[in-house]
Length: 274
Image (cartoon, rainbow, N blue to C red; front, side, top):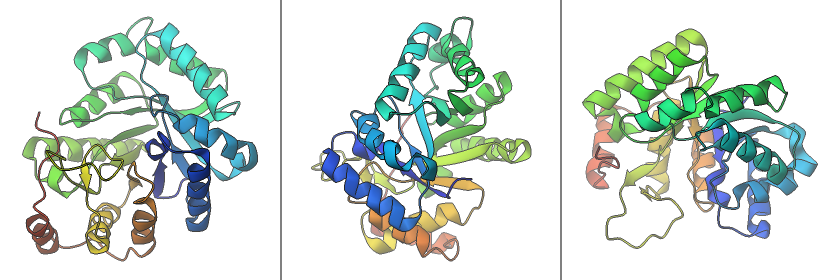
C-alpha cells in the first residue's frame, strides 16, 4: 500500500546528507510511505541509502534505470541497490521511455526490459513500471502496456496539460486502461507554473513551480480530486512541506472557474512545446 502522495527523490540530488535527513523527518511526520528516486538523480540514491538501513520497513521504495540495453540496465540496477543499501526495491521503472528509437531498443531483444524482468524473477524488485516526460508520453505508455503488463506508469499531469487537446485525450485513454487493468498512475509536474525562461532559478525544479500556499492547494487538490492518481512531490526540498500540507488539508477538487482564475492570475503557461 502506498500513500497518495509520493516523495519525489529528485529533490535530494544535490543536497547534503544533513539536509536529506531533515527531509526524512518531514516524510515521517506526514506519514508518507513511498519514495521515488532514480539512478540519474544525482546523489539521491546515496542520500536515501542511510534511511533504508534504519527505516526500510516503513517505505515503498522505487527507483529507475534510464539505460536501454540489457547489459547496461543490469549494471545500473545492481548499482542502484548498492547505493540504496537494500537487497531489493518495491518498484523498478524504465526511465523516460518516450522516444521511439529508445523504445525499440529497450523493449526489443537484449533490451532493458529483459534486465527488469530478470530483476523481478531474481527477487530484486516486486513490481515493474515505466515513466516518461513530454507530450508524447501518454500515447507511448499505452504502447508500452501493449508490449508488457507493467504495474505502474508515471507521467506529467496538471491543469494546463489537461487543456492540451491531444495530450488530454491520450491521458484520459491511458487512465481508463490503467483503471481497467489495475495499473497505478503516478503524476509529476503537478505544481508547474511554466518554464523558467529568463527568470532566476530559485528552486531546484527544472520548471518554475507555483509557490504560494493557495495556488499549491489548488494544484494539489485538482490532482487528488480526480481519484486513482498518485501525486509525486516536486524536486525541491523547500516546497515539500507546502505540498504535503496541501495534501493533508485536501477536501475537494477545485472548480474550472477557480483553476482558470489561477492560470490568469499567475500567468501560467505550457511547459512542453512538442
